[in-house]
Length: 283
Image 1 (cartoon, rainbow, N blue to C red):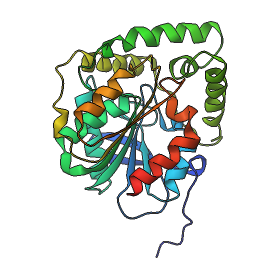
Image 2: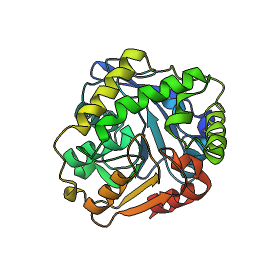
Image 3: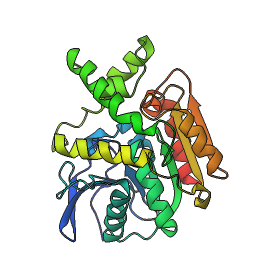
């Protein structure tokens, strides 16, 4: 009988590893064990420490949550895959190695692109899908993310800021406050923190997104799982219109567009979005 207490806050979740072939994946688990787990797919350059605890913790009160470092990122070994299709294959291998044959997926940005490739290749694996701040393969202006990202990194460097403050949030008073609060929440975990992504790995991910944006569109009518889509109305990284495109192409999907917000709208509006996500995933 397992007598260990259930971890329900992300800042306390221990980092574990699992070997899958030649790759060792780093991951964290929290929330009650059993049932269908919710697997989180992180954004460009994201590690285990890039998930907002105000999103993760409410879901982990009710569900078994799993976050993981992609191959070649953070504490996971190996090289970052050159394409998002390969990243989806890695995610499938990781999930199956943990012994799960049915999961819910919560994804953000690049993670949502990988999640789409995963569900199209392995539809039997995913029960419910959350796509936030993301877009479809071949989406209009998706390939411009590379230039936008590098420009905002320069802006952040000149102002001694975190690039996510520019990439995820509007640069008005409301957006700047939300950005600072978000960055502070990411620092709440003070022990056993993950390693930052290396520059070559980051560049490989960026090029993979560019290829995704320039590829032929996927047949999203094949996604029949209940799907929740969310974004801000001014996403500069993955244009907001692409969330509407996803909504049109995934039958029965739900769409939330938050006002006066950008790529990180779900973090800016976490008090509103987290309960919606909990209810959707709990249905």
